[in-house]
Length: 154
Image 1 (tube, rainbow, N blue to C red):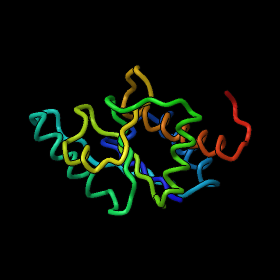
Image 2 (cartoon, rainbow, N blue to C red):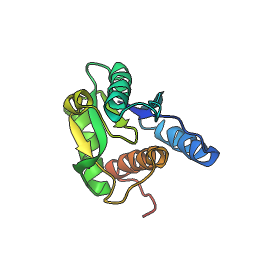
Image 3 (cartoon, helix red, strand yellow):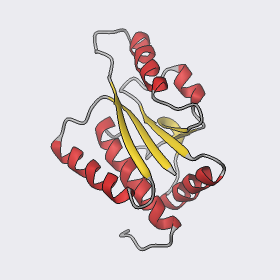
Image 4 (cartoon, rainbow, N blue to C red):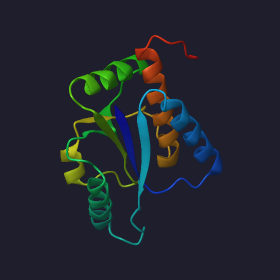
């Protein structure tokens, strides 16, 4: 089992970087996990061009056999138990690798949306793209703990 997290932009805050490293370490006992940054388009580009540029970079980092889950404001919400069940089910249904994609501030290009197997969102609240990485890593760790019946703080 392998998790890949493709993110537009870079982590710039040390505390978020430290948190991401901690959860990557915690996840290592359950599966291989890697974070992949792709460049964000400059603000000077028109939105359509920015989406196309970021979309091409995202798609270039997704392996053909990977199951793709977009972290999308238009996606479905689920609680941690459901997320755990769906994540494990996705692996069991033949997805040796799941790629989560966190887009840039403009969202996703149509080709990226079309490549997605599933679209989910954390909440009705809005989080920064950099904070979303840490939240996603924590929820993946929590999902594995739930799936194994291990205790974890609530």
